[in-house]
Amino acid sequence: MSKPKDEAKEIADGTRGNIWSRFPLLFRRRDKTRVDDTIKPKKFRKKISLKLPSIRLPFLVQHPIIALKTLGREIKRSLGTIIHSPIAFYRKVIKVRNWILEKVEYLQSESAKWKATFNIIKSPYSLLRALGLSPQMAASFLIGVSAIGGGVVANETVFAERSFARGDSGVYAASLLGNNAPLDVPTSYTDGDNTLLINLGNTPVREITIENVSVGTVFTGSALPSGEQNVVDIGGNVVTGGTNTRLEVGHLILENSRCKKLELTDINAHTIIVTGNASDGQSIAPSPGTARMLAIGGGHHQAEEMVTSGGTYDRIQIQAPTSAVNGRIGTLRLSNLYTKGGICALYKMTIGTLEILTNEIGMGDGFSTKEFSIASTVTGANITLTDNVEVSIAEPAIQ
Image 1 (cartoon, helix red, strand yellow):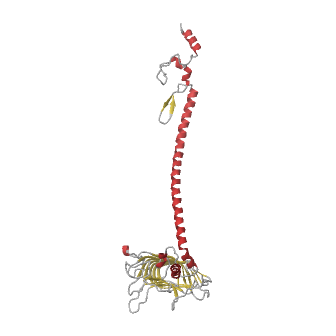
Image 2 (cartoon, one colour):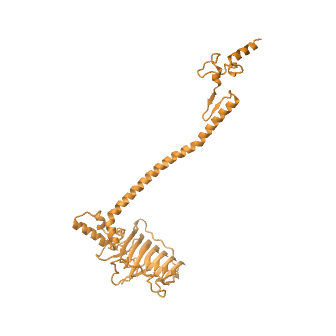
Image 3 (tube, rainbow, N blue to C red):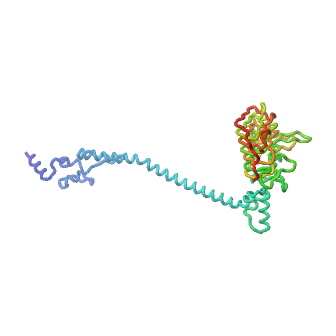
């Protein structure tokens, strides 16, 4: 028998027990050459793997332990790829986010620079206002100085035309002249008259807001016009020889203001809210009423809003002077009116919602006189009165 001789030859060649020598036709080199005795079988002890789309699976033709280790490494690497792919996506999202934030920060910085530039341009006007000059006096002073001295005042045309939005006094027509009335430019102005007067007419005004202003004798050089007692005078008119008028307001808010006296008379409202007011004596006695809910609209042809923030006036007045023509306002907001020397008066109005919130009223003469007064001629279908207290309050000092 030749078996011992073959085994001796395999032992001499070092191929005994090797599967490569027993099945040479099953395994080929990558260049398609046939395995023969001239190639040392130990070179084929490396793993032979099949590449799949997501994992490499080795043929288990190696030693079982080596094959299992190889399979474990492949599984671990595939799992690592799966785990780290969301992290890579998140990092890309972070890059996009940072790019957007950089652009936003750049735009904000540019906006701040432009704002600072305009503040510098208007600083002479603001300085004169801070020294106690009225808006028209400050504007006239700047224009006059620039004309005499031959110097350049930044944007002189801004101060040449009076404006409601910039806090200039004068007579503003609002809707008195119809849809084409100039809202922001006064229809008339008398030199030396520092009253802010708004005349209402046929066309509704969507909103009137007056806030952060000083009124009456509270600032240096101010005085009430001769014969006037009210620093804030808002209401309808008694028309001699004609039909009296009222103001119709969807929502009236008087808040955070300072008055020597606050008087409300002849008002019909659906909802009345009086909350958080402190006064040097008060008499709050509204009567039950049947007024309906009210909203003021005007569609495309209503007048736009009139908004001003900051200014000094001898007096503020809103009225409806034309016979039988009620003034109509969607929202009337009076906020942070700092007054001295006269009465804040609201009267002859029909209102949807009336709010009197967190005001201070008084002139330091004790609780026996009632500086905060809501008369019985004020009626409401829904009335809320909360946290209104009496405390000793004197008039403010001159600014």
